[in-house]
Length: 145
Image 1 (tube, rainbow, N blue to C red):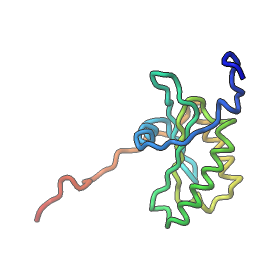
Image 2 (cartoon, one colour):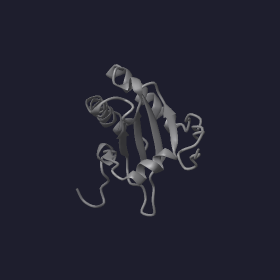
Image 3 (cartoon, helix red, strand yellow):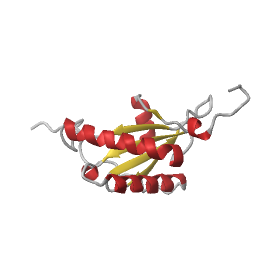
């Protein structure tokens, strides 16, 4: 392939993984689409040198279950994203899936359909409303009795 030829679309849209915490935090400030088994976060990743392509990250908290359950959920999400992002992912955006409680038990085909719907909503800019800030004391101003 010469330098003047362009890459085929399936190679240009090959997703890479997010590895830095800052990228996950940046995605959290982006568009949010909630589904029963997961929450999808989408944010443009363009920088001074242009976009960085389609990237994805997966996070599952300890509230979901033990390590076996969390790893199973991450494997399922990884396969969902590998199948869906090349066709339905937003170019030059970061995509982060946050696992929810019922995500492990949900049917894989149903999760796949929900992911396609979530990616469609994200491409239209139709995210869910922003989360409310947490209420109450976060440990900084403890009362001494």
